[in-house]
Structure formats: structure tokens, C-alpha cells
Amino acid sequence: QRVSDGVAIGQCTVLTTSDVKIREGFVIREKVDAEIKRFKKALALTETDIKTLRDQQDDHLDEVRAIIDTHLLLVQDQRLIAEIEGLIRSELYNAPYAVATTIARHAERLKAIDNPMISSKAADLYDVERRLLDHMLGGNLVQLKRLPRPLVIVGDALTPTQAATLDRQNVRA
Image 1 (cartoon, rainbow, N blue to C red):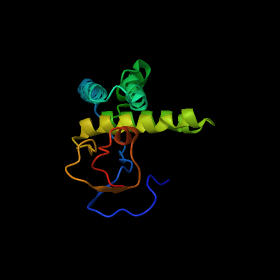
Image 2 (cartoon, one colour):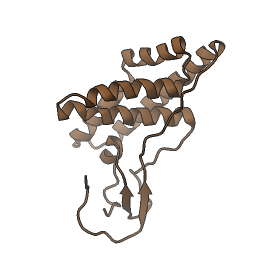
Image 3 (cartoon, rainbow, N blue to C red):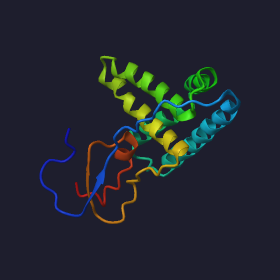
């Protein structure tokens, strides 16, 4: 699906949002509490990120705020949190693998629903997963809200929050 038809001339940046592949990982029983603490720290940092993002949005962008509010609800979802913690405790999964497994299961269920409004919410789950994994694995999320100069963005896809917070003044295409 194209975002922009036509030709754009200018400096470009390549953005890849391909899925991060999390390999199956486990912890020893003695490290379960530390792994849950690692997950909760990533959860708190992700929630802070999302709240900051929400606070930086213009009030008139209701669609953007709705996406961000959905992400906030996901990181606060006690059933989702309990499911991830349960995998760490019972299956001895490490936190990234527990998150990836849980998100994938729920996203696949959403994508199977024959309603575009509901099935599209899988992208929101993956966006939140990306933030959680970034905090747990020490990555650096690509930020498109403040580009240093006018650029042409080339990539396979944008996440919902990347699209919502795009620096529209400096994106040429």
C-alpha cells in the first residue's frame, strides 16, 4: 500500500519496521522474580513513553489521541500483564519471549476477525510490543516526530504511532 504516489526528490532515510525475531529463551527458577521485575520496568518505561507522546499531541488531533489512548490501555491491561507474568513463572520464559509469545497470540486472534476495524488493532499490539522489547533489549526506537532536515522516508511500513507523530513539515514523501 502506498502512502505517496509520484516522485520525490531529496535526501532519504530508510526505515525498516520489520518484526524483531525473539528466539525462545528461558530463565532458571531462581531468576523468575528478577525477570518479572525486568518486564515490569519495561512496562513502566513504555507507559511513560506513551503518556509523554500523548501529552505532546495537539488537542485537535482526535485520531492520533485515540491511537495513543489505545496503546495506553494495552500497557495497563491487567489480564495481558498477568498472562505475560504467568508465562515467565510457569514456563520459565524470559521476559522478551513471554511478551512476544503473548502479543503474537492475541494479534493473530485479532487479525482473524472479519472486521477491518477490529483486525487492524493487531498493529497497535505490535507497536506496544516493539516499545516493550526496545526497553528490555536496549534498542533505540526510530523517532520520526523531529526530523533534523527535510527527508524522503523509504520503508516497508510505519507503525501506528510513527504515522501519527510524523514530522509532517520535514517529510517530503
